[in-house]
Length: 160
View 1: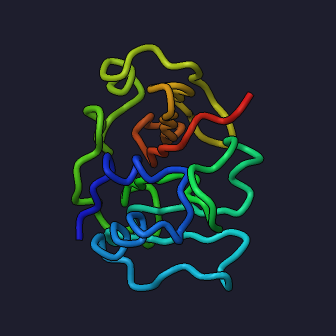
View 2 (view 1 turned 90 degrees about the horizontal axis):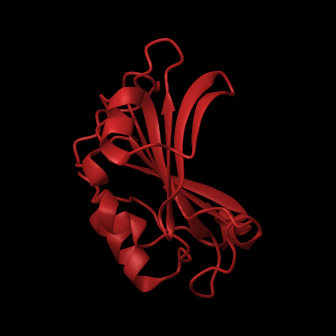
View 3 (view 1 turned 90 degrees about the vertical axis):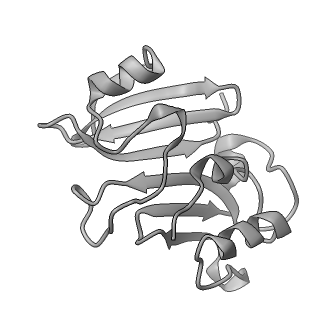
């Protein structure tokens, strides 16, 4: 089942208990609902495990106040390439902003413009847009040798 990533981005900062987020996750193929037992951190893999929803109780420490009260706040959405992630199926959805999982660093820069950061870190190459939109960061991790996308992560900008 395909996940609407652009719609998912709208849920960043909401708790797992938010009815609209819960409905979206169920409609996108989630086989379980997060509960108090999953605290303080949880991940839901959807779309053949190619889309990872990361939830945490410590959202406020990194991103500022959450958008509603609850627990396990949606911190980020990561779309992984099956070419570089073991046990991950092919993502069959559409990525927003003209992004694709078969892009290289130069393709990303041509599409999104000059990034806030590009360079090697943690054994990979990153192209990062800390404020691609006022309330959205886009981080692209690329294979160090081929410079092809291994994952694209969407989150709120980290607080200063």
